[in-house]
Amino acid sequence: MSIIQQHTQATLSDAWRTINIDALQEDSSVNFDTSTLHPALPETSEAEVRQLTNQVRQLLRGGDAEGALRGCLESPVYRGRDEAKEAHLQTVIEVLQSIKASDMTPMLQRIYASPGGTECLDVLMKYLYKGMAVTSGGAGKSNPQTPTRMTPQQTGFSQMSGRPGGSSESTGGAMSVLLSWHEKVVDVAGLGCIGRCMTDWRKV
Image (cartoon, rainbow, N blue to C red; front, side, top):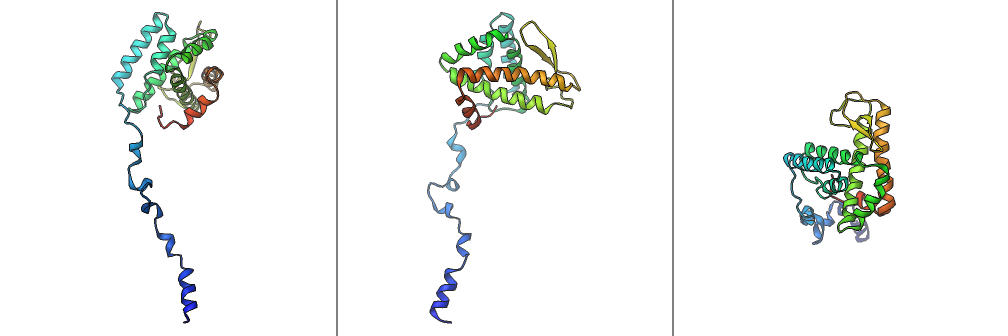
C-alpha cells in the first residue's frame, strides 16, 4: 500500500466522532455542576402555606383584597412538596375571585408601581398559567383539589368550589376568570411579563 493510500484511509476515518470535545473545554458544563449557577431556594412547608392562607383570609375578611393578593405574590412556593404548591395555587385563585372586575386594573397598577411590583406581576402570571393548566387538565375527571364548580358571587366573578365530576361549562367559567386576569396583567405589565414568566427557571 502506497503512502498516499495510507494517508487517505487515515484521513477518512471517523474515529474522531467518538471524542467528547466538551470535556476538553474548561468552561464546559461537563466540568462543573450547573445547579450552582442558581441560588438555593428556601423550601416552603405545607404548614407555612396554611399559615399564609389564614393570614390572607383574614385580610380578605377585613376588606384588604390588595394586601391579600400582594401577600400571596410576595411569598410564592418555588421549592416544596406538590401539596404545598397546590395549596398556595388555590389560595391565589381564591383571592383573585374575591376581587371585583372594576378593581382589577387599578389594583394591578398600584402593585406594579410599587417597589418589587414587576416581580409580583411576574409571579401572578406564573400562577395564572398554572391555574389554566390545572383547570383544563381537570376537565372530565374528578379531582378534589381542582376548582371545577362555579357558584355566582357578588364580587363580579364566580366563586369556584370543588365538586366531583365538574361539567365542561364549569371549567369554561373557571378559565374565563383566569383569562380575564391574564388580559389585565398584560395591559399593565406588557408582553415582557409573559417572556419573563416563560424563561424563569423558578417554577411555581
